[in-house]
Length: 330
Length: 213
Image (tube, rainbow over all chains, first blue to last red; front, side, top):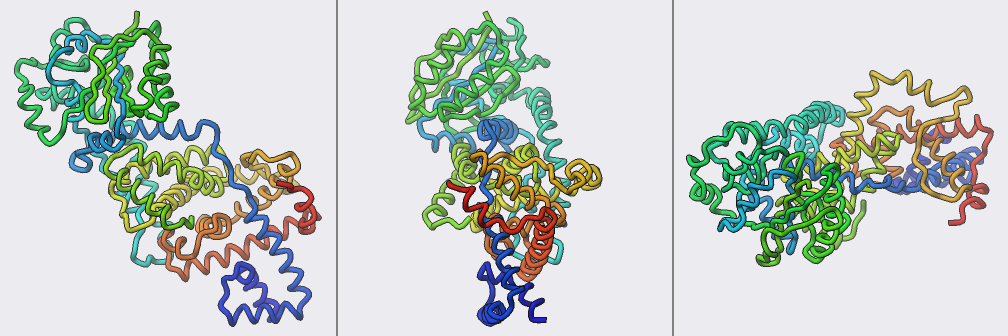
């Protein structure tokens, strides 16, 4: 009987989890019981194995891959209405001296036209409202610590929840982007000027479209473009966005032989310099942030990818240096 | 998981920034905890490729919900909770589909375990010993149901306190204790059985000679 109880308590005893009375009991029993002593030794061995089990290193490239995935999320969640209205502004303020780079491949005409326009392109870029994922709060509910004591199987319940969320989450991730595009093209068409900055861009925007968009910083989707003359451009912009500061971006055109993999290279370059990929407004464009101290290194890296032309001089607003860069094929 | 006060303060600063949408601050949190998250996921899933995908999914979930994170709670507890729940969920999803193939595929007639466990990059001797130990532990762990496995990993492999586990799992302290106790009994029996079967006494001598790090 004593042996049985001793064995029951042994692990907790060796982990020093027992109260005084139990500990005294085990210690006293062990003195007199060789059987239990032997088992204690074995158990200590086992416990040592467990605690000596080395922590595994992260797989090669893990962090970079993860940050890339998070950047993809950011693309979707960057502007959830109401939740994080000041998202980018705060972010940039905190990064202090970040370099923002937008690379758009193709459709450079529109960007060239923008040059010299008083209103920096970028203030519009951040105005886009995306559809808000509904599952955020659900995730939180399941993930957040709960203060109430839960019944016997709360883990089970929660993870059943999680199962649903997870499925939804994955779906959302994929479904979100098309939704955004669609929304911008259809519903927000009259606010073209406001939303287009972060609109997905199509590679093959025609010259004509580019001309139409000359008041627009970055090319629009090919989808039907409403008459921009009817849009309430600047007034509307500031009416909507009057609480936000403008974030000018420096525009640079990058000419490359082949656009294949260029965005990835730019993202990796940014990451290697301590920056990160903000998101990709479309399959052909990328926005990244690089610490200001690495601005020159970044530009050098970009120059190795292709030929660069600056559309605007280095703009320094407060602590930030901002770029807007366009890439074209030669 | 036990962090000193200044580290916790630091966490709080990053969290506040991350909640405001600062990606760089979020990345600092990732940097601090990604290895822990990866390791607990690896221990839960016993498969390095799965652990990579699932642990990254954990971070995506965290990123999506950080704005709602209750700062009164510890970030470590929160991220552990997401990790554990994501793993449990994944295990349950697979259970129905793969339970047969798991046993057949990974265990040969002698009971040698063939699960993939990442190489820790140790010397050859250490490697053999560690691999052996890991195999034994994972073999025993694999027979535990998720809820026992979870609390055991958190307590006896990750070294968390009962209170932390209580918070992570949302279970009552008494339940945490009884589950850990049962899980330990099971693990002990399983591993002792393996040692007996392999004709291998406890390896204190082995380990002392073998490990020189």
